[in-house]
Image (cartoon, rainbow over all chains, first blue to last red; front, side, top):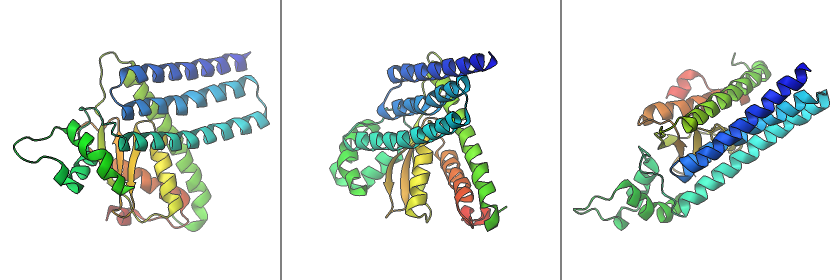
Length: 141
Length: 123
């Protein structure tokens, strides 16, 4: 009885966490903040749900399986997030203008300064990231 | 606490601390998303990477990316830097850099038999 209540609460918490990540996908301004929102679902959301199932149907073997599942989920989601962010940057998905500071764009401009007009027009952060990010950053790979 | 035989204890402490960090930062990100009208103040910050082995660097990048508020975008081992995106940089890159390096130091204490001391890290 108590196990059912606690397990159900964990399942609902996990579902709510995944829901908030979905809201974040719609609400947040760029690829990188959205990836962060997904991170909450992949971390807490899935972990709560797995723990909830383990509590409802508790055996020590299930607990072991649950912990392994959570660890595997976290590791794979980390690799996925990194690959997503990196490929996003290399293909020119620039961070939102509210990203201050953007030292990656600064470094890209410093490396490939010639391609950026440095005359009387000062490039905005957005265009600098777009111009210099994809091409010059590939050198860092 | 930094003798070789204390490694299992240090590893457990780090695992617990890191799990707690995942919970706290997840709740922070969720709270930000669910607060109407609130926008994040993200940033991309250059973080120096110390002399880490391949495995240690991989683990650090995974750990930084697992915590939902931080995300590694680029790594340049030759230059010894990586670029980390943070949801809560709030225009203060120094504090953010210190936080990432703090996690690196805690990680090394949790996995190395002879971790660096605080003084070595500060230099």
